Length: 433
Image 1 (tube, one colour):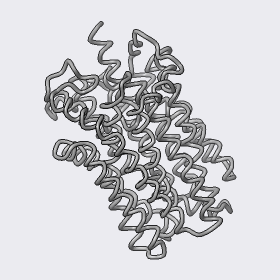
Image 2: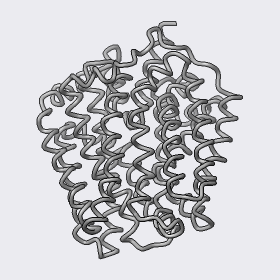
Image 3: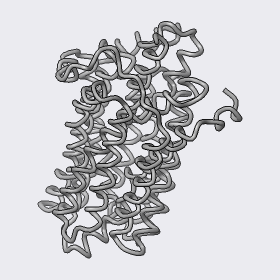
């Protein structure tokens, strides 16, 4: 697909892509204002960490139901519902005067985000010209831009007020909501609605459960770093914004380019062993040298490389080894991994309260290494999946030629946020129509 045709898209595609950028900003948007929230709301770091916990735990549980909802009311209605919830709860968080209020409203925000990310790529595929491959490129471009820009915008708005990032998201998402309502056409529903308990039942499959537990342990270290690294840096909001912007740029770049290259060169399992181990070492260095600002900053930025590779390859691996439909596998996997992300900041806060700032990073590094050990128990399914992918018969792409299959799975960065399986589901529905 040429770059000219890539950007010659209907207005509906750019409306949803814009919403994707804003949604993905939320990953790092609050990082630059964490110390400010702690100071200005008289909250401890452990209380502020609940912003991640409430958001991610609700997202985790909601992942079990988003497919069930979307398959009944349609992708556009689900998308609009998610966007509306984000607008309302982001604005309420900005209006709140207490840390407990913000934590509660972040939970509602998490529900909206789960509904949005479950269907955003499906809507782009429904509206885009050029098919699935072009939609993946657009989606990943929006994802990368959002991840990189989120911390910087959060820092800039946080310099004005800690409320700024919340109101900024509310305004931008409100614009995206109006554009989606006006420009996006309804998409066809799947032929068969997703059963409510399908994701839970899918976890009975060992390969899927192994990947989910690996991701849970990885996310434990990842969100420990994301939630607590801003404190020992002792930087202002805009300075923190630049640090996490550099981190986000590396994460996005290596998600899109580095991970597929490593998978082709070394295979999924060896690449994950290496990337996870490097990430664990970086988190451990933060824990050991917590009092040395330049070490913390360097390790946080460098971790974007390993995080980008891990994010893409772990999710790609799920889609390769899961013996169930892709939307069901994505929901089950998302549920397990987001639990790790939600519990880690809460547990880290308790460790800081009882011991010191070093302990949660050391525990986070240990959790990641435990994830490597868990992953080794699933190396046979991963090796078989790599062989199948190389032969052009990747799960869900048996009707594609080898090159198309590889490109499609290489775009699994989109799956990291839950959208790709439903998009592929839509693509198949459209082909049958």
